[in-house]
Image (tube, rainbow, N blue to C red; front, side):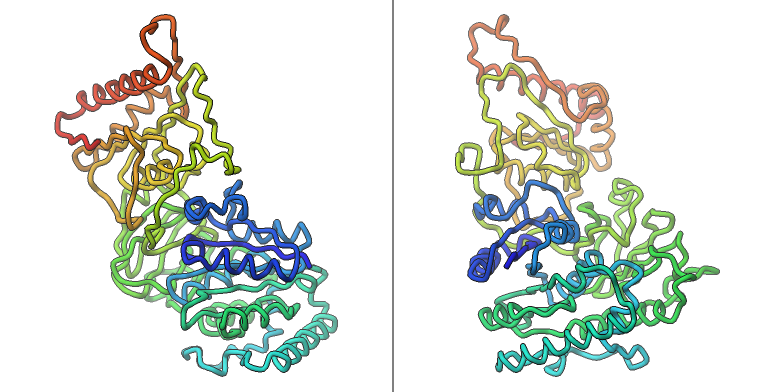
Length: 494
């Protein structure tokens, strides 16, 4: 049996359950693992799992799933440890939908679950919504029977020619180790692994229709009652929850109008950072949160306070496909791992001390792929959040940063680290971006990466490492000269 495992987020790794489940699944077949999303990369490195979990590419969870589909895996697992079952379950369905349900087949899939959209949608998950896995054989028999009925439904109704819906089982393992931990078999093809893993981890098997009815039934009912020729692909699943036009104050517009979109976020707690594609765009005020966009620009956050600077930095975005997180990027604070001299790692760090140049990078966006900078000698970061995230990641590679900040820091990780010889310069509010633009133009020639020659002919008294330190210090002084031309009010934190 070929088994693909998509690992999402740092919590499943930090908890130790990612490795535990990977080793468990190895007993049942040939296992391949890759990360889905970017926030778990540092956790993979700290856990020394980069040779087990592929982190070589920056992929969305659904992109990782689709790769396994192309590789014709028999079973694909999604491992996640959401901050609550609400966030975990809604996340899992979005990944399943984006990975498996092409637009033509969505309607019949939902009908095949026998969801009655006319019933009251407000209810809590109870024991009737779980498959009782105390009696393994009966559960497996019932589940396989259900699968056969679905296949009959597909054949009668010309459900799909997409073999992946029939030939690949997609299973989510959510919050293992917690009382509300669960296993969800999203796809129609059943696997005995669902119950074997659930029993091994002492988890309940949750029915997918329960999640869909609880969190998505309003939008599904609206969509299913429409004829397919009157609705565009991008219209479906703009909403993630029940929210009225009046509440959104969208006048003279249909809620599915292409230029105006709403994304309702589940499982939010008060006073949490709101991340969109890695950028902090605001802070939550309560448990109900909706992000509103018009023509690709965030215009409002219901249940939260907008961070204008973050919205400007984000630019245009498709909120249907954007990665939204609330709270901390990484809750736990394990001991960071320095891998610069680790010969057993497959991260391909360039430790060439004899090269005749310095590579210096410019970074003003925390959502960029910071791991692409692992072979640089110095990184200049602009903004508090960007500096915090970048310095914490680059600490693992022993790469110092010169951070230009203004004290407008959102707590995005529990504890941040920075490499030796790093310097953080705090300006007055609002000046970090102004300084960054000037530094980018004058010192980087409007490029994201520059090289500084290490000319030994005029530095005969210095060895290569001393010359490197001298050149970095000289570059720092050039930055300070630029800052002095803007303001004399700043703090230097080494």
